[in-house]
Length: 116
Length: 111
Image 1 (tube, rainbow over the protein chains, first blue to last red):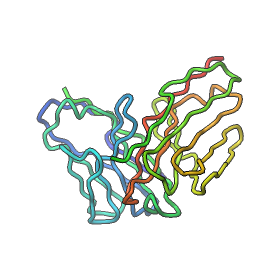
Image 2 (image 1 turned 135 degrees about the vertical axis):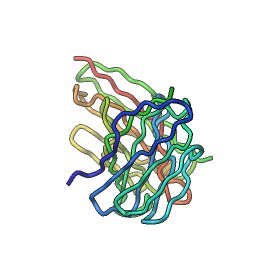
Image 3 (image 1 turned 180 degrees about the horizontal axis):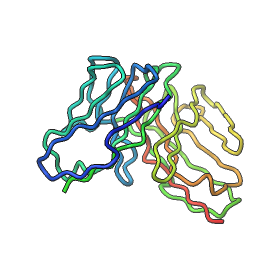
């Protein structure tokens, strides 16, 4: 099992460009999450999904869109990148919701994004 | 809004010394999770505490959940260089739909 994978690993964008980050998991997890990590800020939730075809906003959703067309994939889109979106992006998945029994979150290796 | 705070932000110890990080929530938590992130790596789940006053041990790591379920701590006995990394606590938001992470405590160990 590969667990949670993310592509790409690194990316440099110019302000105003768009891109999509792909997250894939092979653990048949219902719940998937996108976080951003900035120095000294911990992990902040951008969007999450409780199942195929459903998405919801997290703590810092502005400037991002997501889609969960297939259970195993969760896509994060930046329509018009801004320097403030320079960050490390982590995808995670879990079998249960945070309040559930099997709620351990499995994280991908991250995508380091720089917006110039 | 709901917040999870961790102290200290950074801690440097000599190998063999003990280390403790503290986590405090502005609201009562149904459970609390701890994750470790090695430098350049991704967060990895360590443990979950659910019961008031719960204490769990993993080798040299001891995790505690406060009686009021608003605070937690992670204590490492006799640190080793392999303990280097950032330790995060995370509590569930009030809707039960997402984790709120603390900002983490970064531990460095010199031999």
